Image (cartoon, rainbow, N blue to C red; front, side, top):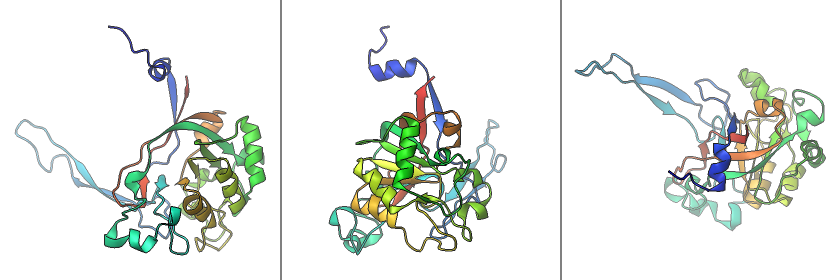
Length: 273
């Protein structure tokens, strides 16, 4: 049988290594106080019911918010002065309990070029200090370090190193100490380059000063409302950074949750083996 001559299939057949870019989902994992936490438990266990042939099955119930764990924000997630992206009236769009415009069912599947902007590496640290504000200059220096700058239609992933704290929910959430993240000027730097999506290894994709919590989220306004750029949060960029991978193919397939404001995701980086 003749093998396909499709160049993408040929590239995959040549060998591809996949890097996980997300965190595992588990009961008790870190979660923003603005969202209901993730819960999973078995509702049927092996042996609760056994079929005549000896077979048995187990299954679970999962309860979670759309912005818990590694996830992507739909454009319906944030409004400003009553408007969603493109001037859509937020109150009208959410009538009936789901969004008729910019719902999560419109989140795109992504197979795109991606650039890892390793800001922690720029500063020569494993993890940026709590509450540090990632600037446009930081992103520019990270692009120089990567030897690649994100451009039109690309995905830009910002590494602060904060994912190293994921196993310690109190430290990771940084209520008292703050959390590092992009500033407004960093968000505009990305918007100026026309990226389709961006993500970071923290809960809010924002600089969170000590004690401030999630009172204001101006970078969300710049990206989602003003620019129509999707945001991913709770990424784990440690493995791909340690491998020295800075430019790669990014794969993502969000759940199509009709009228929702976000979706859990399992993002992957693909590089030639």
